[in-house]
Amino acid sequence: MRDIVFTRGSGWIPVVISEDGALKLMLGAGADANHEPRTFTFPIGEAHLAVLREDLPRHLLLWSAVLPLCDAAGTAGRLDESAAVALLDPVLLSPPADVDALFRRIPWDWSRLVAHGADIDLLQRGQVCAAMRSATGTGDEKRAQEHHADRRRAARGVVPGPLDAAILRYTGQYAHGATVPGRMPDAVDAALLPEVMRVIATAEQACAGMRIGIDPRRGKRATDQHDWDRVATAVDSAVRRAHPGLVGDAVRAVGFLMCSETADRSRSTTGEDDAEAADDRAGLGGSARKTALSFTDDKGAEKKWLRDGPRSASAEFWDFVGDRSAEDNDVFTIEDEEMGEGIQLHFYAGSIARVTTVREGKGGSDPEYRVEYGLVDGLGAYRDLVNAFVRGGCAALEPYGPWMSDVAEFELARRGRRDAR
Image (cartoon, rainbow, N blue to C red; front, side, top):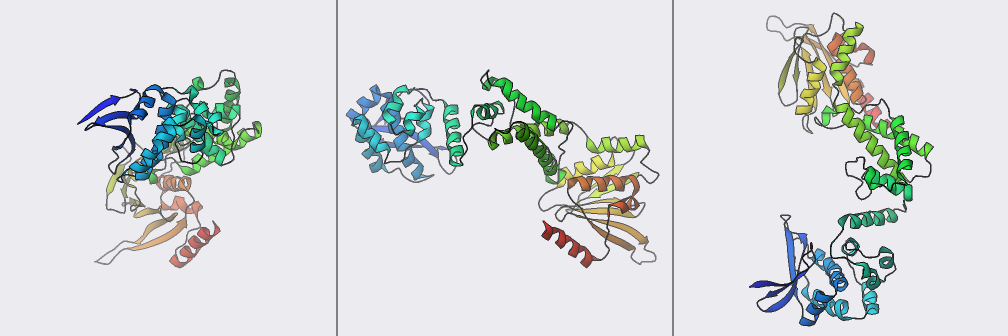
């Protein structure tokens, strides 16, 4: 039978239980193979319980010292009870100087002490008992996360200044650089906020009017990496030029914010529909504009498009790609059956084939096709080729060459491009 003898009633701080008449310390740490929290126990004595009741700093220090043993147990291993019990007297009953000396010899968990208010400067000097005089029973996980981020940066030789730290907090990137960025002015000291906003204004001006499109080759929500890199480079250059004292982490945080916001704005536009509508207004559609097309992928799926539908051919095609594209499905075809021509896009290879019917099959004979290959540099070029085919068929693709009918010649050109990179 298990009864709780003593608990501070706060978060994950270890509790004292009585199990079959024996006192034990119980704490949760780590997770099992099913990602469920693991619970560990080990025996303690009455003298240890008395200290735990009266001395919050010692309670927290013991927790910090035992956590590495829990980590060592992994997802299924047993806690080294002998090692845990061996920590009780030195941590709970020894003079402060001896506790400090112990913590210079053993592994311990910084984050638990920092979260519960430890003085970070004293911890870094090895004065753990003095550092815990400011300890609190309630943990502040944000403080621990920011301290962990500071230690990671210090390991890379990065020491953010006040403005750097303010920018990281404004963008929500101080503790976790991979977190989706946002604008958090309330997280910044009021005295530094105007300076932060000047940096943000520089970045906004640098990327004004730029777009980050969707890359349907990687799904319906994936951003175009080329567009993303273009915006990031523009912001990086402008911010470093105007504010040369900023560390790289702060500059990248601003660039991440600008790219994220630009991508969000761009998602509300329908680029292919807009492009074709603009062509119609400018008279660029031409008499060869397609009226009916079929889209297919490498898995046998097919979608039909008719000109009198609500959306443009290009928009419908890229939606089809976004829905169907996968690592094992990256060849897509657009075919005009009436005109006997089409294009095949090879996303895996950065290439395209245009196919035209030279002679229709008659009397049981197979039709004859002319197949020509071209290299394609990125999503933007693929979009241009699709739009051109929709406007004017294979003939409209001529300016996007060179086109090669010899497969060996094409493969040589493709290898040359790959080697050049």
